[in-house]
Length: 308
Ligand code: HSE
Image 1 (cartoon, protein in one colour):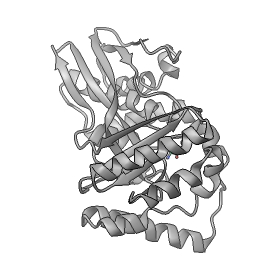
Image 2: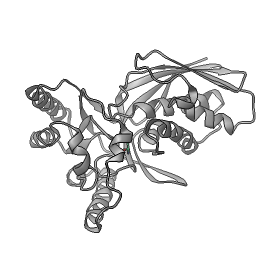
Image 3: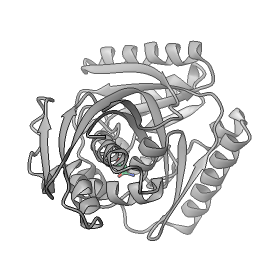
């Protein structure tokens, strides 16, 4: 196999209460990536996205993970990568993670699948480091593995797929940009014990709710008393969008990753579509340009479209 074309989906990190440890893979939108095997140890990046992403592989979120992967291989091979980006950088929908995850999954196929998914997550985190200065796996793990993933630890990596019931996800992307590095910078470094107790109760509740398909428990657990109170100020209209969506029946939701997109989970498509209408109404009233969509949980993660 010399070339491969792969679909790398968007993801929602944190899932409200699980900062850096929970993530979910979306059916749409997705990037398309093409990789070609080279007979020399180098990485070449092309992109047709119009987003002016760095072409230097060391600074590119697809390039850095591939460089790490090549360091672990004692062969004269490399990769030429073409990225067709549909997930807007800085949207909070795992754009950098899709490039990183798509690159390593595609490369692994070209190499005859010699690395495990967990090892691929390890390489892909180098892309997140390039993007935000910090390694985190709550976008790359669900992007690679699909579904909902729990990142129990990143040093050493310990990733647990969490089975989930049918969920519809409504997303609104107010047309502003929030850089993950900035959204991490403003976080407090210490938390009160009473807040920590609430938070880990919610995380455990959310995981149990997903595993037991208990929508009421999922809904009760979608609460964040640590990160959201700080980051909500970065997103205009956050409180009113959230309250209005829950009023029409959403299970709950919050900031997607580090924002500025907001997401809401619903049990059925009708509610998810009503939530979309509400999101549009709120932002139209505020005069803020925005994009919305409704999608479902993607259980397959990165998928191959073609290889030869
Ligand atoms: N967990 C990360 C954060 C995700 O919230 O900073 C960034 O996409």
